[in-house]
Length: 459
Ligand SMILES: *Cc1c(COP(=O)(O)O)cnc(C)c1O
Image (cartoon, rainbow, N blue to C red; front, side):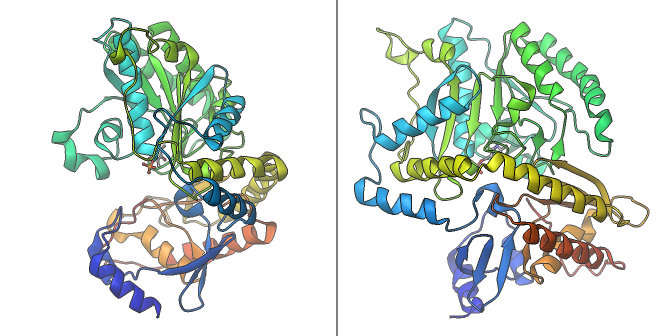
């Protein structure tokens, strides 16, 4: 069967996520037969270098032999059981390992099966913890402008990306919003001062609303889905201190940035803070199986522990909570962090990305190039360094030019980013940037107003 055959069968029945399905009238789907390491292989012998870790999850690439072996062994032992009233070795071991890695006090692990569900859990737990202390009025949340925390209704209420949320406004309990510390376009030397200045708005909001606020939720260091908006760790330090002062929980959503992506194992380590809740998913199982976890401070856990009152307990559940195969994949992934000394390796590869980035910045179409560990992003602009009219869809043109050259990138609007798997080698990085350079030139060449490409490039 050819790519076209699979595409035709797919489009007869499959409804794809984050897609205006009509776009596939002119942008073909890519059916993938297999994937190994960095490469996805289609049904006609073409291949694509996965420079975005398949939506930020496959941190060790595809089909890693160690994770494959661990899963094969696990599947003959135990694949899934309910974990209300039961437990199993992979879950106990994973919880021990995560607690040992996490910032101080995050000693309790509550599992779910995707990122948005983890956010829902953290929001519910925060409100419930205040309620258990007799402070029912603390039930609102505060999030940053352009925040992304997932797309189920509760998570969408703290998400601030109109593309995803505006349609569903009548269904949402929108959170309070504060303009964030976006440092795009500033030299790195000015990031700290800018973030201190930006924090004034957060401080004001906390002072004004502390009585009704349960928690602030934030993506540490990088607001991913908004277009890789980056900021200095001092903002998190100030936020931790202010949340303590105003008695508001701090939820760090490290679903995108956890597990080594920003240079440290968890991004909040760079601010030397410990949140009340830490949400993890995406890279947790190295892109093998859906799983998420909310790590919680012991002192908060204790607020739910009660001899007499069932309803003081956290009764939330999902059928696939604590899946044994997912937990085993997560353990195998954690093993690779130590056996490959991933944080040191990432520092070297990030430096190589930075050197290429510097060179790429000499293109008049590459603006606001920025980097945080293994995330590098820039804006596509016209020759006068002005943003393109979004209807020109330069990001989509770049996506197409890159995939014709064996590179998978998926710009967010006109924000181009790479977030490669950690197994990326020197020559892979060289290849990624060579293709990016060509693709930028193609995407930005000439005027495009023919309206033939009606799709918006989505995250
Ligand atoms: C992806 C993401 C989520 C949602 O995770 P899903 O598994 O896609 O539901 C939440 N928060 C952040 C920061 C994310 O990047």
